[in-house]
Image 1 (cartoon, rainbow, N blue to C red):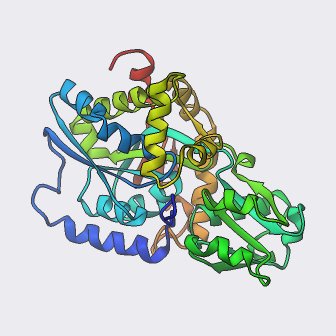
Image 2 (image 1 turned 30 degrees about the vertical axis):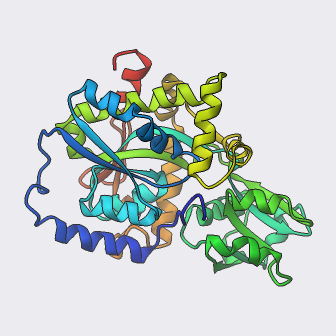
Length: 363
């Protein structure tokens, strides 16, 4: 099973989500968020999101929910895209998601979404692999196998930019993440772009060379916990409980004691790998264990620059919807109030508020 569970956002899925959303708006109780005491969060298997599942199993989520007199049900969804569809359609109040998919699916589908926790970013977990050469420039003219319109596709576009090429210089071949390794092993495939654990499998193959990876674009592929903006505004207790639980989980799993090792071993088992395999992925993932570091990151220019690149990619590939006349169609708000794009159609927001509370010991 792929750990990223096909982290792909394509035009068809985005439009489907928009359709589901339009239907769900007629369901009583979904038109406006209200103060309540029960919430549902969806998560799927990936190195950066395993802590949520472990925290649920170990009672840490419940502990923090009890602190604020609420209930939080953290539910594993076996398919990543399905988890986003369910969130977008109204079945969940929050979901684990990448920054690109948050823009391309719920935001593009009309769901005002806030990035509550910036958990980590890929720092080598995603890469471009060539056969028989260690020079990225040799990709020119190649058929590159990848999951089309996924973060792998975005990574490839950024890799090409680094050597003054565009997608016109190559040919994208849509390939399931489950088939990537087998495809690369065949004689007629010379180039792929993928993520872990497949990327680590490819690293060990003869004549395979990782010529560009996400460490070359640090901070651009983020793993987030997002929640519906209206729900968060009406229920700040949800934001406090989720954020407090997250940092307790990270403090535990990255500690130096036996409990930390056991926590990582449990996460590895739940992810379908072993401790060595999971820790290999952790080494290529930049977690913000200290909430103050997460605040510094989200308040820097980095997310703004990243989301500008992401929205350009999304628009060029039709991910913002057929009615989007430009990348400015959807507004993206940052902690200082700056809006990238339309101020009249803000649907994706970054906040430092709750991570700052964690840093200040106010949760």
